[in-house]
Image (cartoon, rainbow, N blue to C red):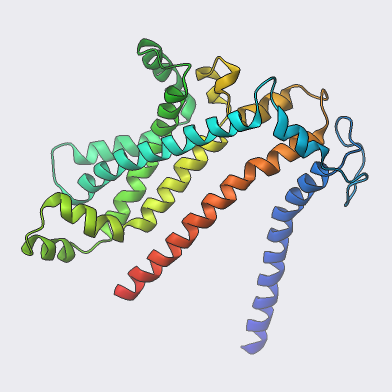
Length: 282
């Protein structure tokens, strides 16, 4: 039995090592390219370390990585779109998720099925109606219109995820709050919402990442360079082929990843703290 446990542990460690290498090797490759000042276009040889160490690719990215648009403007556009989409999806999704979790009303099951179907459909299926609607209200080529597009894509997942979080909250806690004189809004704000924070955190993180990293559909709703996001600029740089060194692309990738790491670290701490709190209460 001990031998089997030792063998299983060894195989588990080997599998984790393979997975870790599979994840880390591309990241290391991007870091190596980002600091290689010898590249004139794409790399033509395999190297573990930069041939000529340089930080000029990072300086080029921080100057004007896309046409005449500053990096600060691209970052601002990405933050406005991704954070705005996450907030809209969370605010609207929380109220809808709580209604689906706690109340009974006609058409509840069909509505949940429609939301699930919308979450499973490819985003390209919504591009034509969103294009028409945003063109009618004159928001198609604005950052607000792009924010609404990404919020629409994230909303079905947020509703389903937060609905499960609200269902995990014991009804007895809400009933006790009602007996103490709290109304529905107070109970939702001070009881259900804090205890469902892990699910809300996951939904917010997914909505943020969806708006921050999406680039293909965004071009349909953007017509000016001033409204381009970081993800779109990387796509545009790739489409230029060998017009610029790959070290600039790798530098852009690394710099773009920094806000994601920061947001994930902050939300991860909140998620772990709340999960520990809920497990202790149980």
